[in-house]
Image (spheres, rainbow, N blue to C red):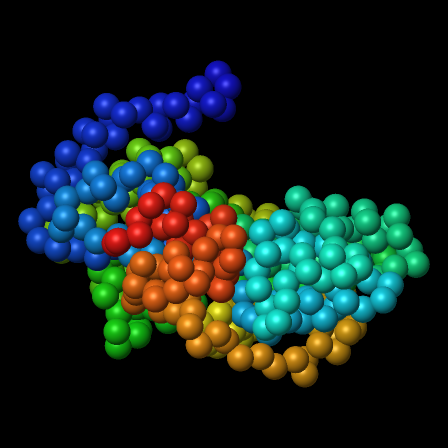
Length: 366
Ligand code: SF4
C-alpha cells in the first residue's frame, strides 16, 4: 500500500464526521484546548476541523512554529553573517522571507549575499566540504524534531575535519514552553494536544510531570484529520471525567520512550540553555546550545555576533498569538498591513504560522 493510500484512511469524511459527532456527544461545558504545533494548526484550518467542532470547544493555537519563535536578534545575526564576505549561509526556505529589523535574507541575497536553501543540515556539510575556501554557516532552527539532524551535521563536520563549517544554534524545546504557558497568570489552557512529531523523537516521558503539576490533560496527537479529532476527543473525555494525565492518540508513530538513539545524539552535541522566544521572552533551559567540546562549530563565537540587539515591532502581537492569548484576527494589522506578500511578523511568513493559516484558509473574523 502506498503512503498516499495509507493516509486516505485518516482523511475518510464519514469517519471524521463520526468522531466529530462523538465529541459533540461528550461535551457538556466550554473547554479551551491548545494544539502546540503549527503543523496541527494548519491541518485544522485546511480540513475545516475547527468548523466541525461544537462551539463549546475553543482551539487555541500554540507556539509550535520554529520560524515564528526565532527571536529577531537571531534573524539579525543571520542577516549580518550572510552579509560578510566569503560566507555562505544555508537555511531552510521558510527563513528567507522572515523579516529582521531592517531586512530579510532574500534582500541580502539580492544584494549579493551567498544564501542557499537546503533541505537537510547535512547538505550544508557537503557545501562546506565542496567550498573549503568559504565559511559555511547553517541556521539551525527547529524544535526537537530537527535537533538530531542538526547534531548529526556537527558530528559529521568534526569527523571530516571541516574547519569552515559552523551552525547558528536556534533549536528550541517544547516542555519548557508548556511550563511557561501553563504557569502564566493569564493562562486559559485546560488541555493540550502534544505535537506528534516532537514526541516521535522525544517520547512523552517528560509530560506526566507537567500534567500532574498543572492538573492538565495532555494527549499526544498526530496531523491527519482523524488523528486530530481523536486527540481532541481523548482530551475532551479526560476533561469531562476530571482525569489528569497523558494519553497517546498517535500510537502508530509515537512510543513512551521515543527514539533513544536520537535523544542520545542530541545530548552528545547539545546542552539545554536559556533561550529567548520571539514575543515571549527568555524561557529558562528552553534552547539547545553546543556543548564545550563542539564549541568550535558555534557561529555566534566564530563571528562574535553577541552584540547585536534589536527591538520587536510595536504593531505585531505575535507574542500574544504564540501564547494563545489572542487570535491572529485580533491583530489590527492582520490582512491589511500584514499579509503573506508583505509580512510584518514571522507567524504570517512561516508555513506553520498561525497568522498565515488564518489568512490562507479565510478565518479572518475568528
Ligand atoms: S498578523 Fe502579522 S503583525 Fe499581526 S501578529 Fe500576525 S504576524 Fe504579527
